[in-house]
Every structure is written in structure tokens, then in C-alpha cells.
Image (cartoon, rainbow, N blue to C red; front, side):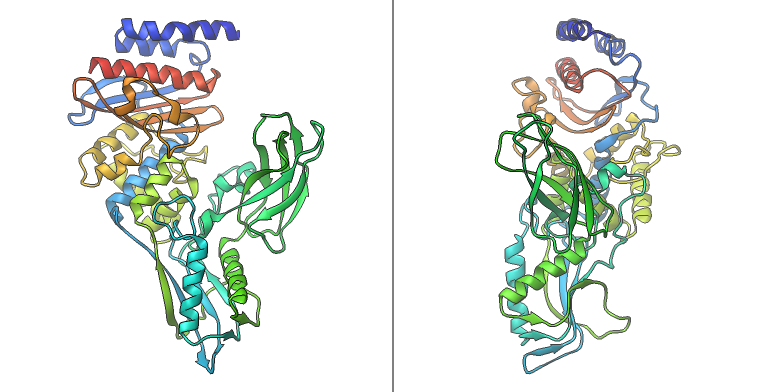
Length: 477
């Protein structure tokens, strides 16, 4: 396929969409270069009546990518409620005497995604959290800890799904969903670009500092404007990582984001360091663990999370994988398999056939996930009638959305879609997907889903084709 042929075909689509009926437009898109050999599932229904507006292979099993997040975010709102909060608690065991705690301090995580987060509205910043905890410890009469600060993540099975790619695991977007999540479970690695393209990019530092973490560095320097093409290869719990790929020239330093190797341990270490600066010393190293069975614990204080609806908003608008996986575990009482069962049950409540629904995670990072386009549309119709609908609707991206990231926020800018479209997108290699709601010129609300697998057209062209298709739906229905 020559690029000029595809460009010519794409140039013709807007006019064709204005002139042709919806089914004909869909057929033309399906037959276009770069798409005709792909698998494409399309489902558009009236959100109220369920009337089929247009569809193409709506029951084809496809890899959905990040639009899968609408399942877990909707299920969490349905089961837990949009105003649900969680509490991270500080306890101590042992006894306090003359300013000395003869025991440990435990930071008990409950799956709060907002603890120390810089992304979630109403989230307490890390400095404020540590300051409040320190004040509470001093108020409890503790000036010296004859023991350790312990990060307790035992509420959850804090592991990533086994089907996630090795290339992803060490990067921030595949961060471990720990019951004791702090600061979005990510850190930054700062590099100094080489003076020559292809030269090694030197590691300068990490922020925050990670005690004991070492790097095997193969990061190269790319041309100016080439962007972040760097990857962190590391297993959870490891104290070493391999750095590969490239970062661009053009700045004195450039940062990429990695996943914390052990979020609970990091939280304990960070708070221990804060306590030392505040004059509260411990005589043993911090670690990750839990109190002994039957131990008598005394509550020191607790930090209440931001409401669940604020977590859902960032999960969908920024497509934040970590939050989706935390919501899954909350649904399952800490167990991801039980969470997936809850999601399946919620999806089944839409009346759709889930006999072939295959879910390996909640965020869509796994290529093992297989879902029909119609299943998403039916779930959106189910949510449309729920009391939490406005909170869910507000979590989806609108054209020009300042809280969104990536290509999606540009889709529909300057068109009638600006005030009438809300959607979630997904992308993996060879996967592009869209699902959401469209308010039409005639006052109808449509629920729609489009999933393309194994296409070869430029990804940006798919955004344009779907924008044109949605505009035609807006005008006609």
C-alpha cells in the first residue's frame, strides 16, 4: 500500500460521509487501505431504547485495549458507590514508655489510589500526609522507635497480571497495584543526553531517591524532538533494572518514569526518613510486612482517601492502569480473580452474552483480553440508567478536555462534537478502540463502540475517520 493511495482515500472520506448513508460510510471505511484486512467490530445503539443504529461484526471477539477500563470503573461505582472512601491507618504494637515505643509502627494500606497522588483531586500531598502522621506519632508520646517502620500491603494480592509484557512491567504504566500505594507508585529517572545522536545517555539521579536501586544502562540519545522512547526492564521487588531505548537531545536533562519495585517498602522507607528529619528515630531498618497474628495493635491515626468518583475520573480521562487494577481488587475484596468475577457479573447485568468474555486484567494492558464491541455498548446503555451516571459520564473525555492526555483530547475539536461527545479510547500495537456517548442534533443519546485489531493504517487517520463517522451520526440521528 502506498502512502499516497491511503492519503487520497482519507481525503475523500469527509465528503463521502456527508453524502452517503451511515451503512455505506461504514462499508467504505471497512474497505479502505490499511483497514480492509483488519478485524473491526462496530456497535452503535440508542442509549434509551436499544435500537441498533449501525453495526459491523458487533459480536467479533477482539482485543479492546484501554476501553476495558469502563467495565471496572462502572462496576466500582455500581457496587461501592461514587462517594466511597478508604482509610490508610497507622498502628503500633508493643508499648510506649517515657517516649520510647518498644515495638513497630505499621502503615496499613487499604488500596487508596489517592495517597500522595499528584493526579487525583482532593488527594493529600505526600508532604502533608507525612506531616500529619508525624504529629500523631508525637502526640502518642513516641519520640524513639525501638523497632521499625513497616509498610503493610497485606490487604491485597499486590501483583501484576502474568500476561503483561516484559517490556511493560518496569514502566510506570504497569506499576504494581499494591494495597499500600503511594505517589502513584512511580519514580522518575533523569538522564543527561549525549552530545551526539546514538551516544549513551547518562543516568543523573532518580526522584524520589530509591535506596539500593541500581541500573544497567543502555539508554541512547535520539534526535531532537524524537520523544520518550525509553523503557525500564525490571521485575517487582528487584533492586536492579535495565534501561534501554532512547531519549531526545535538546535539553540538559530528560526524565522517564519507572514503576516502584516495592511500593510498600518505599512508603516505609520514605516515612522513616521523614521521621528522622523530624527528630523521631528508629533503631531498625524499615521493611515490608504485617503484624504477627494475634498482635495487639493501637491505632495512631488514619488518612481518608479522596472519593472513588475522583479516582474513576483520572482512571478514564488519563487511562491510568494502576487505578483500574486497584479498583478491581477493591471489588474482589483484595483478590484480582474475585474482582474479575464481579466485573463479569456486572457486565452480565446489561443483558449481553458473556459466555466468550475473556478478561485477564482490568486496565486493558493484556492482549489476552477478548471482548465484543456490542458488549461495551450494552454496558454503556446499562450505566445510562444508573443514578451515578453523571459522575461516570463526567469521567469520559470530551474534545479539548484539559484533564485528558494524548491524541484523544484533540478528536472533535472545532466541530459539533465538542459539547456532545464523551468517550474513552484504547491503543496497543495494532489495536485502536473507542467507546462512549454521543448526543445527536435531534436530542438522542447514542452509545457506541468501535474496536479495530491488526490494522496497518496510520493511527491518526483512524481518529479522523471515527470523528467523521460520529459527526454523521450526530447529524442524522
